[in-house]
Amino acid sequence: MKSKWQLFASAFQLIVGILAIASFIIIGFGGENITKWIVTLILSIAFVVLGIIGIVSYKSKK
Image (tube, rainbow, N blue to C red):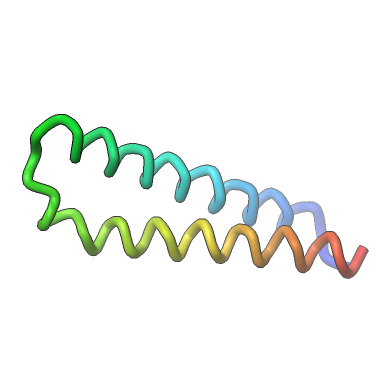
């Protein structure tokens, strides 16, 4: 059984990833050149995926 701390960390990753993706979209609509932010978008997507995997793993092993 996983600890509550791991669930909290996965939820935090998910929230940070979603907020970073939203920031990328806002920057894009604001007229900023987004080509320099592509790496950040990729990391944000990775955070979301890792957060979802962690939450699903916690729920399935509980």
